[in-house]
Amino acid sequence: MKKTAIVTGSSRGIGLAIARQLGLDGFQIVMVATGPQERNQAALDSLTALGIPCAYVQADVGVQADRLRIVSEAVCAFGRIDVLVNNAGVAPKERVDLLEMTEESFDRVVGINTKGCMFLTQAVAKQMIAQEPLDGRKGVIVNVSSCSAVVSSVSRGEYCVSKAGVSMLTALFADRLAGEGILVNEVRPGVIATDMTSTVKEKYDKLIAANAFPIARWGRPEDVAGAVSALCSDKFSYTTGNYIDVDGGFHIQRL
Image (tube, rainbow, N blue to C red; front, side):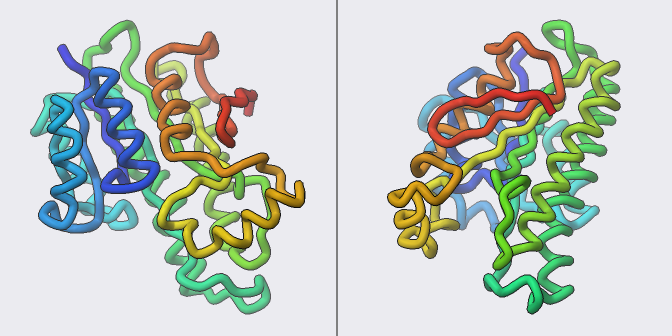
């Protein structure tokens, strides 16, 4: 029986790279994105052209009904859920000084990045627990957070808080679900070259060139995808509660 992976925010960038790599690893893919399927058909077609079985779910992880629908449609399409990659996330619409940050921006970013991760994981974990295990375990959950979980950026404080919350969720769910045969780990990308970071490319280019940033170079979406793939395929000897920093290489540490 083939395994199934849900990848949120997978119509582009890091999420699409993760979906592609897991598909090449042999997983059936549930692509989750906020836009209608016709808007993201090219991304979906790029996976099916590689022979990857795919289903598409239009959903906003910040909305409860959508989160539950992701689970039900994944099970309807493929019968089970073996991997959840919580990749969907947003940045503030505008970078402003911490003293000027609005509650509206905070609620939006934390509601999607942290709350969405929390309650989608909860719903998927219940489905995994109810399933018969494959290869000796019920499932794998990987949270894609950010180096901003530990690196302060006062012009986008709500984003840093949201990703720090994802790191704690990783530890909490790792503790809760280890006994259920579900592994929970985290990947913390550094500065990854995607459309989300295109507007600040010049800024980070200067910081990296001056050795004034904790990341050595721009990473690629494929770097993050490789780390997620490794966590889902037992390429490392650990079991749960780890994170991987990604800045072009894997740096595995204990939470």
